[in-house]
Image (tube, rainbow, N blue to C red; front, side, top):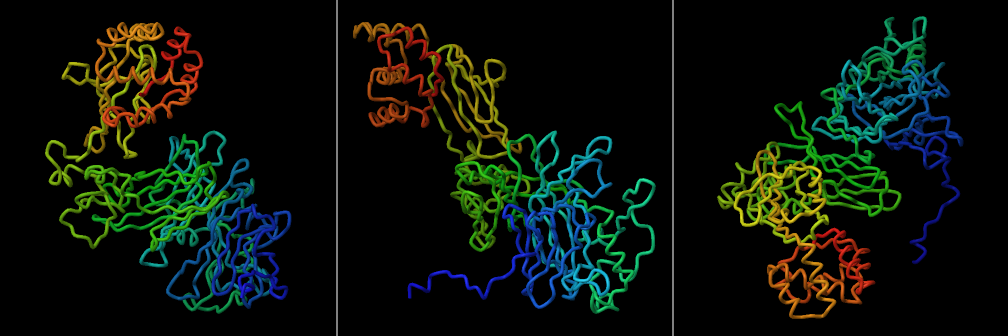
Length: 624
């Protein structure tokens, strides 16, 4: 029946949303459904001021955090919630909330944000005479993600944005990955910190934060802690109490006034595993995949940003497994327009990454081995655990595949050791050299584009003069500027004609990526030819072009076709006409042609103005 596909809301199934979802959808909230009960961190009022951690649904009475007490929650923004077992006894299971909030008065001078991890016991049903229908096991601790600085002054990343739990063989001890940004007005930056649940539990077993002294400041509590220790779940593991309603009054009173821990949780190795500063974006989301490679297991992080890009990063141990090197594998643009990535999910079964934003949902494959080139060395230098050289291409790595031709080295990325027996000795990289011919007009500028596929390679340029076998290193200065995309020659001279070599150097391995032959056209010669073109003297034009090289003659003929053709308005149309004309000649030209379209249009508007036409052509950047 057609009616079967119609969605209807039944009045009898309406549920009060208070304590389950916020009135304002823009507020950051987190929720988790466990055994039919909903744990949610959200705002309970219309104004968005009464934030609390609730447990609703199920058969028990709703329960929440203490109301209007900044020691418990101080204008929080919830990130995520997770169930993590404490022991083999399910009665000890705890729900952990990750959030950020304003620092409690006295914790920090001025207004500051702190990242937090909060815990509650799954079998917490509130107190009997005090904290009725309130959590009795709620505790919170600060998450530190900072870079140690001089004089003991750290650079803190306090704005917690996202959390991902990487499960291990022991379900009680997942690795916690957190994405942080700065709340500083001085600089913008992002960081990823990694935490151990062992360190988290150690903090929750440490001293409670207590206000004392003449300035009513926060200090570690030095008095007697009541038994059972506040924050401990009632279970047979620790004995004595079957329910939180049976807890002594002194335990409830202490828990009510001491919800915060004094010691913070520091990340593994006491510093971030990845930092990004001085960039035009910040991290927003993270998911992690544990990948089996030839030389071990590696965690590959996919990090979303606020401009719609995703960074693919792998953690590689250095001398020991406690010291990690973060290698950026790819930086992928997901959405056409810059937009904040607000959600990410990973499917290891489908080998897909799903990305959500305000503009839509997209998916990316976890591995794109073909982007690393078509040579063994490039595949090996990529250090992508998903990919390996299979003897003919860079393809998906499978642990069960044959090992005879498979090449992969994630830890060291050494192509000389792993690829030399597969390639020709004169060209161990197996790389096909790209060659181009570029023309430029004297006193104009030109750009030699060259960027390696690897994010970590260093570009090295060499220059070889015409009719000279020697190569010399290019020294950048006012005349030549080196950028991430290539080499800019600001003002061409005749002496700039020659062959330019672009090399990529990584891990002591150098391969040539590009060979560019640059021919600089003499301005006086060009002006003379244009003058003769206007006079229509074919014999003079032929005599003047005899001194040109064959490639210069092709360039001049194409140039004249452009400025004399009334129907070609853009350089793209010009190139399309020229390339279709002669397939053999087209192979001698570069694959990409870049010019200033407005200047070319200006040339066509006035064919009789030789001086202005020549002047405009000299000023236009050339890469054809």
